[in-house]
Image (cartoon, rainbow, N blue to C red; front, side):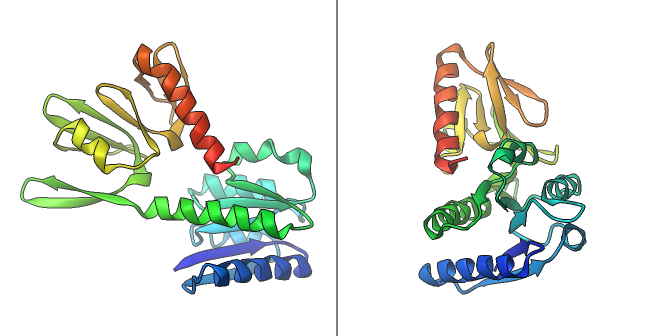
Length: 236
């Protein structure tokens, strides 16, 4: 079940967005979804963490859309945020709250469908997992939670977004075959999730959490190119 939220203080705009969304999901033959509408940021904030995708107007009564997005992120909400607005100049502010996309009013049907294509691909990526063997048991690890993976001796260490680390016996080459295109081998001992990369400089990869991991000189330029391709693929 994909859970969508629409937050717009103009009822007609909210209805139009819901109509675009319904048409898109019908075209893709997706029936397992729900849509909740909110007329303001406060009501949406009370449901933080409940949705996979949020379409969020920027110009609303306080808190406006941008402030609502900041408060959602502060509460640990990891929904895909798609801003819907007439204010083209605020696109750069959207980066600060990790917005996924930015749609301008009036809504263009082709642009909306392209955004939904990317949104659905991103949601599919979020659900991908690997199963690792630990002793006599096993553990399912969603790829979206992995920031980077390193090998020390005969063990792999999976560093997760919440700060925890999972270790198990394996080879990095075997793990590399099991993950998807968001992971890049920046060093012979490291795989990094491009979703968490902020940049690369002086032989180090800078991560969103403030950590740094090594990047070999031979791979530093390739990492930059891979990151650019990855962001271009998201088209934001």
